[in-house]
Amino acid sequence: MKTAVIGTGKTGSEILPLLKADEIVGPFSTSHPLEDPTQLREAEVCVIFVPGPAALNLIPKLLETKIPCVWGSTGFEWPQNLDDQLKKLNITWVYARNFSFLINLLAPVLNILGQAKESMPEIQYKLSEVHHSQKKDAPSGTAKQWQEWLDLDENLQIQSQREGDVVGIHKLELSTPFEKLTLEHTSHERKLFAHGALTAAKLLLAHKNELPKELISFDQLLSLLGEKL
Image (cartoon, rainbow, N blue to C red; front, side, top):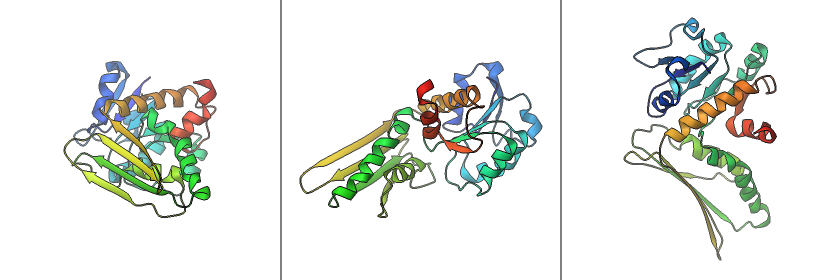
């Protein structure tokens, strides 16, 4: 699988050891930028881990290549007409705020926990996250994703903390006057995100003819292909 690796920061750099030398196109970074789409002519798929502003600048170039892309970038808003462009070009892009398999398995679980509010209005929800001190966006993309999966009518505040080199800790607490439920996920190393992104890339290529030609999330990809995995 010829993979263009765009972004060699904390997570992007973890992708390179998981690929053979002749499978890597690039890598591209601030010191070796992607300036022309023709630089990707040998790539079958792109995996991108760059900050939000840089991601926005890359979108037009990557659309021009017509190559399937897997995005791990957060801290920005996707263009409103992106799905129309992807449909026109007949390609699928996959994104995730977190490429952990366990995180993405939580989607239906959190949806059920959010629905509990309808039958038990007294339930209180508390959502928090901790990341390394260099992470600029807060709350984290994963915490926002948990918030969306809960799908609560109320505006659930997210507590964010930045310290040391913490890879990522996300915690959800549900409580009533009589009991408390705590759901916590801890990421021990960034390699798990790199592995998840490459798995998404392999699935994207293997099933590209079956997938909708639009931007889909990693949990949607796993759900769509669930019976075939």
